View 1 (tube, rainbow, N blue to C red):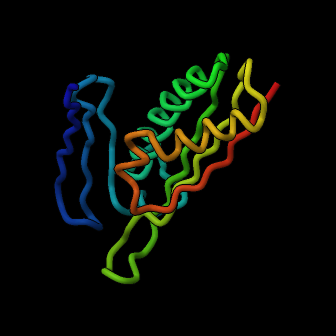
View 2: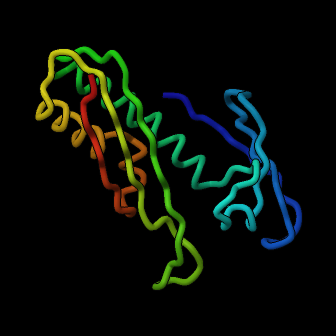
Length: 147
């Protein structure tokens, strides 16, 4: 399996510095990062490690769920997946940590009822590689069929 690479160029200290995150493997883009906007409610056009984790988790989860629905005999017409990743204080070790992730999925699926979809959704939450990598963070799931 391939290795994927991202690169960050950072200048300055935590509070007054800034950087650029480059999605090197794909060449999909370069994005601004800085700590004050990372910790603010309004990102003001910058990304953050948490947003990048959310992007990775939602994409990985969608792929995993799509596969599990197919294995269960269903057909995926559409999955809408969002991941909310929360940064908070690390009371034990100091500094910050990821304090929770909420996955929300709405699916248009043929051939599975709500129970079958929920079972596949739970398996995808536990089994996608990004969920496994984030095993130390509480991950909650809100899954439902639409249409």
